[in-house]
Image 1 (cartoon, rainbow, N blue to C red):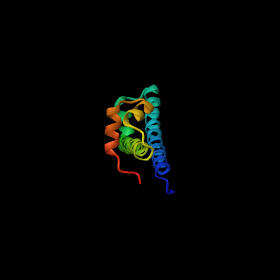
Image 2 (cartoon, rainbow, N blue to C red):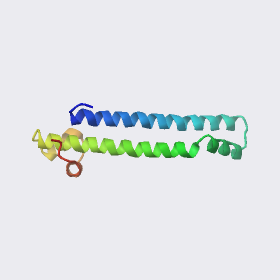
Image 3 (cartoon, rainbow, N blue to C red):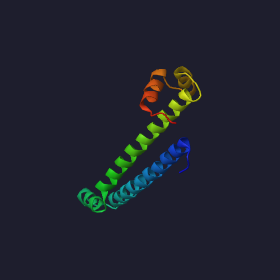
Image 4 (cartoon, rainbow, N blue to C red):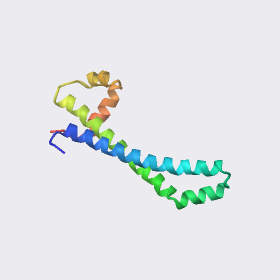
Length: 118
């Protein structure tokens, strides 16, 4: 990564989004296989057993973890960007709220949660 915190932050969010997509794709594969088994008349117990053997539980946990990581990164990105436009560009919380389409109170919370970007 370069030396631009904003680009680095975007790159992190994009990388985590790709990981989340891969985790969701794996879950989709498992569910599609379960669907096909059900359409073929397999008993539910057999389908559930097969899904467990194919890694259903770890796949679900991978999605949970990937989503949590992506959410944290996007929140940090938003907070840092807000702090930067307030601190570096002199925008007020009200101006940023209008620009972002959220409440001034939300901007204040995000601003306070971010570290200075310098």
